[in-house]
Length: 169
Image 1: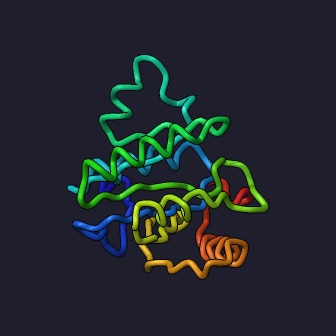
Image 2: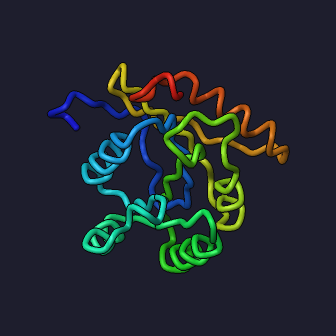
């Protein structure tokens, strides 16, 4: 991270259950950046990625690095994986991109709200800004109970950051 000039502001909470929602997600470079950050920290981090990146030969390594595959056609498997992590670890961090894709989206996915609720986890927002080379670990987000309203607030938060391909932010 230091070599490439990236900085992280804020801090990862220790010994708590936290779902970090990170964005904007506009490029494959987001994954490279996230892995660099994870490797530079001494934090028990898990992350959710589409199942298709967990290819033979890389599957074991990605899992060892905290990867949790999700098949959008069958999200039940994700629920089981998260349940196992919840049982295994007292404190953990799970990172999810609520956009669910690198393309521009009109509406964020809401699965992270269910995951946070079912695992009794706090939700932290993290903005990635390629123009400033910063990752901002923001404040905790308290859901209102109105999913549409919550997703709008989060989308507005991510609008403050420039993704790698900013036209997709």
